[in-house]
Length: 160
Length: 293
Image (tube, rainbow over all chains, first blue to last red; front, side):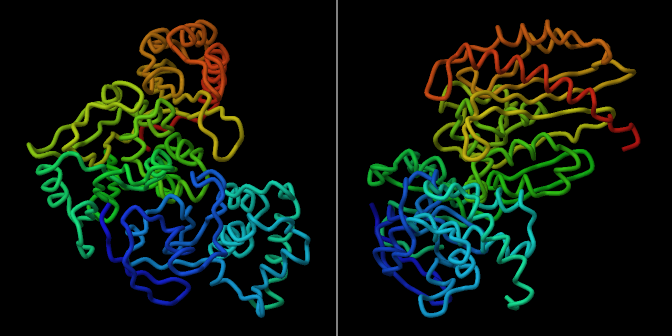
């Protein structure tokens, strides 16, 4: 298949790349930009592990062809916080023990982050719906929901 | 438009340009939200061949909600439908179906046109749109065509659209008078579930009787099924004395569900009958919209 040029902004930084048209956004992020915080799970849009935020909406990056991201703004887990300065939502996940193997965590954090951007204090049902596209096979979701609630309740105090 | 290095991937901005490309070479695979195509080509994306990416065509993103008619462009996403307050008011059954699809990520990507073009018997937007009497609009080299949506699907994955045509949207009249409707779906879990069976019910009532009824079911036939035989049983009947059992039994026979990984045919038929019982009870408890809106 053809090679195409793709210009996109990832975590605030402009990139201009030439990729095979059949490349997925997931592969562009991981293989071209080295942003390996975005994980591949099923590759078929069922598990949400590869979730990123594209122009303010969560998408499965395994179902987006890289050239479809032309001109778009992408946020990956690397754009949320860094190991030295975690985002308070990430801190909340640690505090509440919402991370076990960690493989689904980047995707769940981005789904939760995007939900909280739209509604800073979502009720429990809305949190569940917000992360319904992300499978976790370790924790059973209770601690994840609790972590999101913990962050949401405390956010006025820590000002984020 | 994207810089073009090869002709194997095209992403035109306009319908005119897209139709020109298809007119010259109708072997292009039309890509919109990608939620079906990238799954289909999961382990063989190189076999996608030539891709016509229509996801940038602003003119297919239109939603026109008028006094009497609603037009939804082909690139309207499931999330656009589910979140639209005018649609929630006028056609809540359609919003409920849109909400039942996948999860936020899939609803943000998957489009109305894609749901129709992919022509799965389980396409969740098809039953409510058929029940609303929608027409589907196509554009091609010889101009525009449209079909009643219940005549558009011809088999699993098959429609009456030609390979050089593009779906531009669907159109339907806003139900008036005493209208009642619902959409019910049974899946294996609440999120990311493909329907085991689904049913849309649209009743127009007058003087306490069913004046017009449309029933459409998903995942119980090779195509989204307009249940005309069952409709006949309900037509003209008094709302306070609907022949529920008779209708449910007829619907189970009118369907022809298959056995697959999501359920057996027998199970699907029984679920479908139950959806009709439950759905009719639900619409009976709805307050009809008054003549004056």
